[in-house]
Image (tube, rainbow, N blue to C red; front, side):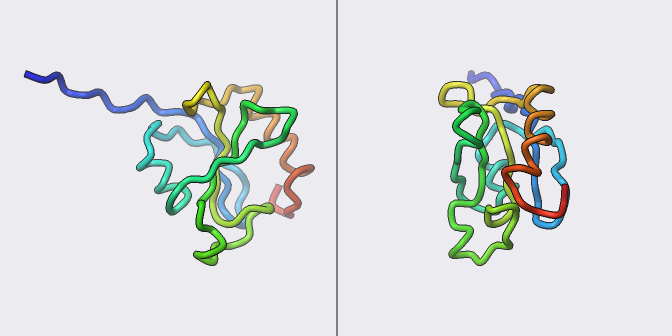
Length: 111
């Protein structure tokens, strides 16, 4: 008899939709939930060289799909912490840092 699998533990991310301010969300740490946020396949980009453990996760096909321009990225994206090869929850300090950097690295009136 096999044991039932536990659902993945949620992780804390910041989600940025076009034309809206960033919102904290707890999402399951699984591909399906992340695909649903960005609307397709995932592409990861380091937030900045100074912060190698913070990643922007966006739709890999944003240009081909004609997704809306959103703070220098196409479509909805989220920011997450990297822990080795896995995604992990943002810390309180990460959230403050991303909100602080947001007006500097993403030029948008929605901050």
